[in-house]
Length: 293
Image 1 (cartoon, helix red, strand yellow):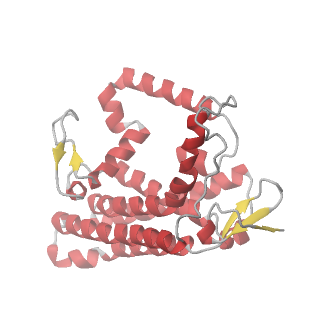
Image 2 (cartoon, rainbow, N blue to C red):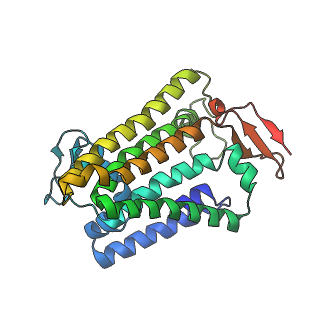
């Protein structure tokens, strides 16, 4: 639902969603217990808890989340607790970022155009279903833990590469909000009319960071997936052969991501609803654009 809300839905009502999700969370906590719901049901707690396997700090087993233990970086990927649900979650996370990049490319626009809400929903569900199906199929060959451990670093690399320019550019809007937090026309600190920009970031440096994030995530994922596959393999003699589908999945996802980052971006024009806007990759969100028929 949250992926659909970000990538497909174009309407308003964010406040209603926030209130509804808050009510759902409180009701679920009252019914299942606060800690149980946060660990197993609350979307963002489960997601960030899964990404925490990369961190050097985490809750030790049996501590109930009340204490923090230091551990080697990414060693949490090798720990227990992987399930089919975790693999699906990580696959959806990685696939959604990949879909966001691919759906803005010229090739995607040539194939699908600017679809209506129902069609775009079907496209999103179909793409997510494809990646999740591949992840689960590979998990049957090498184990779910190996797939989960391999996909988490890749998903984090995608996050950094795909949203870095958005964070550094639109993230500056917090300066505007500080001066007018209630949208009442205030200018408390003289920054209400500040215009965010990314001209101060060299494009070569930006691309280098993106490339390092994607490739670095792939390398770390290949290592962790291999270690877990070897550890859990019932037959060590065939473990390398059984890892080939996992390697193919990770290489395919990473290569597709790098390709999408280097493509022309097509966006719907806010000035001409029936047209599209084409931008160069170095200017995702930049002011240079040309209208397409």
